[in-house]
Length: 257
Image (cartoon, rainbow, N blue to C red; front, side, top):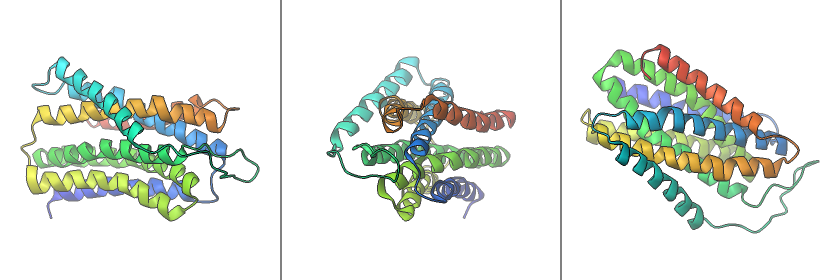
């Protein structure tokens, strides 16, 4: 097994660390759940608008028309998936001394897992390709990816745990989002090698950025307010941005971002 592939596997596996942190202790209250949804929205917004979309637009051979066009396609694709998923009727799922969970929390958990998985897939390819071209840079990007995969695992596990009440399912679905990154690296190793087209990579990143922005604005932030109307979901959003921003600072300090 090649060193670039091992680095990609380790970076993707870091998601499990966040997942385990997300299910330690009792089932989260509505306040904690709302904060975790805002936290996830902050992570996804910062990744999308400050990392993925600019990187896509700056890629060699990528035109602004194609870049922004793929971003819009990602937005439209999100709403297509949103309409395809069933909208359940209100449920009597209650937590002790808290308000009932909204009817669409399960659907939100699915969309959140999907959004982060779609982000992680090209990220796995990028980690493998970078390490294949420059092993020193590969170590750096694998470290930075692992650092920000931890809060991503936490962001997925929290809502899934609240929706299902199962720690096993929460860790499983958070792990799925991490496995998507590993899958990207494995496919790059088995099929693409180091010959990934910069334009193709940039197009995928722009589309995924659109999906994640739509998910954050249309689903995560409104649902956080619905779950806990007495608190401002912006606190979670700002914390998520801050944590993700620190991982990007590490990335930049290594000369990778």
